[in-house]
Length: 289
Image 1 (cartoon, rainbow, N blue to C red):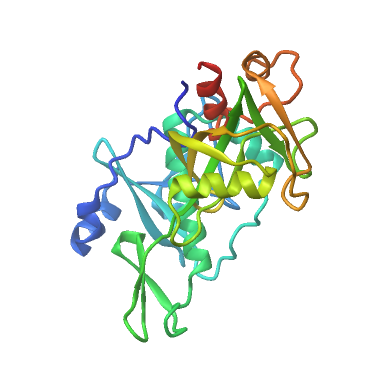
Image 2 (image 1 turned 90 degrees about the vertical axis):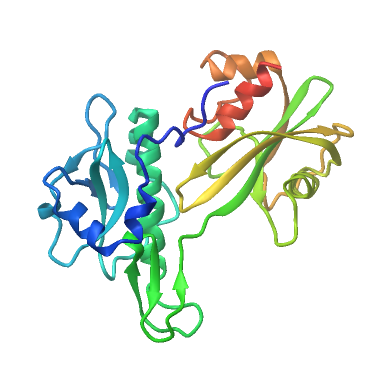
């Protein structure tokens, strides 16, 4: 099974530096410190699939810095711009191309940076009192200037799953996807719900199928803006579909041979999700049996 995209990060997250203002200042002053090159939340990538870095002095004067971690002891930062608007919910064609180029460990660093910067852009004010918040803890938190409440980057859990029946897997598609693309069903966990319960609820809601025997396969950070994708396989009670057309445009049952062909880019009844998406990993795991 291929490793999920955006995993395999190579940086030491250096949590001990987040609690020490003097150590953080020393890291910023380190001559080996580097700043991640981002343009409108999208990374600059070299020809060999590595992230681009520059000196901290290249950041605008008003920039604030987030410590991403240490690369063999060398500090690595991302810049947060006060008042910066959050990125749009969709991903540009350029970003799709960049994600295909990035090496696995590099993609993990980008995922952490993008999620953090996006979170800062969305949380300039306190959820408790509405006061202005300021960066603290080396960029891994915000503190309210008015009431002192501390806020930390959130991660939203999402289940993404295949229902299987009689040697076939259920895949669906949304109208916004590229022509012919089908993928695993997915949905956010709700309060008071287990992973297994969320898998069963989402498949029932979107496809009208009851499932059992939910099995965990793998997980993946997804930085658009900041989810944890939890991939599972479940056993379907039957194969009769009742689609929620508000969620799915279409759904199909596919065999393992058809999945293998799609993943290999061969003639198949559907276009597979890209390699950096955990749906690709999930399909590969299921195809291997």
